[in-house]
Image 1 (cartoon, rainbow, N blue to C red):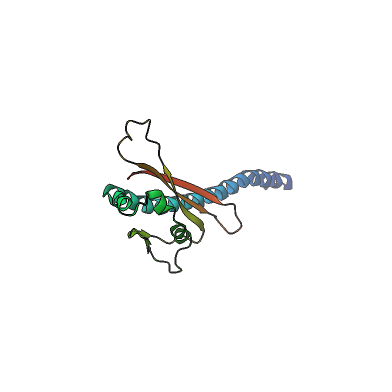
Image 2: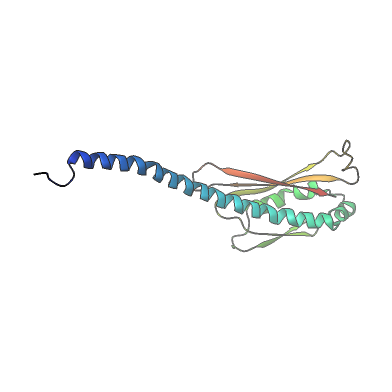
Length: 170
């Protein structure tokens, strides 16, 4: 008489095969979760950078920057690399609401969102573009303005970052 059922060896082989198949699946799900978290912070960085660059582009298009330069003698680099402005960009007020930054003595106002707690810095970098060789840049002063953002996924993790640039005409 034959018995119906599985032997211990068959059960152990089945468990081994299933565990070999499940291991990579669990690892794949874990890495997908990490990638999703990374994407969230990259999207947040894009929004933080866009809010600054869009306001600066608007100021440049309305000749505000050129008017300030002629009135005060300060160019865009002087204004945006001011240590007080850089400090405010990195350490916003405690309240978790948008806040206004006034760039003295120019009276330029920037509306900024407070950074998510995982973001460690937001800085502006300004570089004057050499227009002596370019035919398309021969009228006016052009600036490469970059917004640099740094963040950590969790305390103690490696820092990640992104830099977003725009070209402004003074």
